Amino acid sequence: MKDLPPVPPIRKLLGPSFILLGLGLGSGEIILWPYLSSNFGLGIIWGMVVGVTMQFFINMEVERYALIHGESIFVGFAKWLKLLPLWFILSTFLGFGWPGIGLAGATLLFHATDAFSIKLVGVLLFLLIGAILTLGKVLYSTVEKIQKTLILFGTPFILLLTLYFASQTDWQALFSGMINFGYLPQGISLASFLAALTYSGAGGNLNLAQSFYIRDKGYGMGAYSQKIGNIFSADHINLMGTTFPLTSSNLAKFRSWWRTVNLEHFFVFWLLGLVTMLMLSLLAYSTTHLQTNNLEGINFVLNEASTIGSLGTIFLLVTGLMLTATQLTVLDSTSRIITENVLLWRGTHIARVSKLYYSVLWIQIAFGILVILAGFTQPRELITLGAVINAFAMFVYTGLILYLNNFRLAAPLRPSPWRNLILTATFIFLGIFCFLTLKSLV
Image (cartoon, rainbow, N blue to C red; front, side):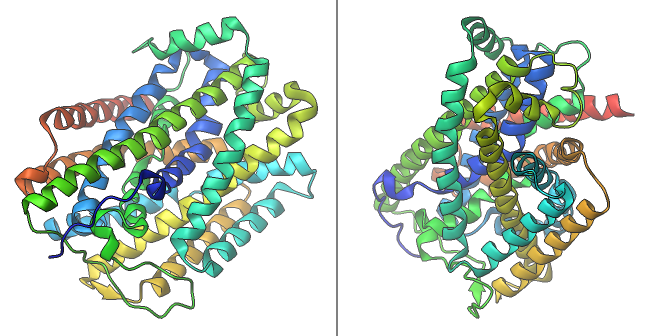
């Protein structure tokens, strides 16, 4: 037990939501929603609004637990059910082991630079990602700086392109699609739509990784936790966190923390994320709607670059680098998740986490390189496959979070009734959509 630290200015808390936003940029924002908008129009954009809103509330409940305990939510799950770490290890690898995002980035960078081969670019990118994560001084700081830089430079560039190419009719179609709830055009794949909805943000178990990032940033009781260093770090880290006594002073500080972190996540993750997704989908619709070869792979992005003209190469470079940064953050998040859950499954709470983390990281990098070398050339199909698996994972852990935060937290710290209602509706919505998608695939 320690007292809850006071809330710093909100500018000092910026960071974790940028990482989660960056995790979404490489899948839903750049690939899946623009692909669907390019081929099926903007009437489906309501799904994007629903997806990012659901993830906002899921993420905040993940933050609630980490804020109170200064540990990842996986520790909370493991304290409750001993077999849950095995589920998170399996579902994380199955959902994100496929290198679809990195391969998509390699494909765009290949076309932007006229490199020797997509395979070579993909292999080099995975090796570069491994080097950056392995040699950075403090792991969290490395990931945060990369995502902040790319988002703050890439998003304005995409916004300006969209403002230039989108017509008044295109904007009207966008706003109409945002409120066109329930509409699905004929011929659209339920699996592709569920994949896009799942990746309206980070998606899958990556949402749970938010608890790592706010802990490492020092949110709430995370101020007392240790951070993972580079591969040469010999520090032993305690996975168990610290909580605070329920005094009137601590409860007042918690309410202040809760208001502040909600604002930070709303403006960075929900608002900036939604605007970025909308602009990328609108740009794809304005430049490539119903072009003949849009349905094949990620040809629609290449068609966008061709329509954009002289800035097309820069567009490919920017989106390719965003995808690469997303793959970097995905590998960091999944390695953290797998590492911590392996330790929790073993019952080990104090360990040299960096040693296992970097072993898991390079195993995943080796697997990604092997998949690329095996000849997989359609990154969108790999992304869709992973997203369907992740949608089921989201359905499962939304129910787990509802139980954890309502029965394992002290009464004054539990979610409000209206937040429970939204999470319950999310759980039901994801369950129904997963069932319908699986039914359509059988």
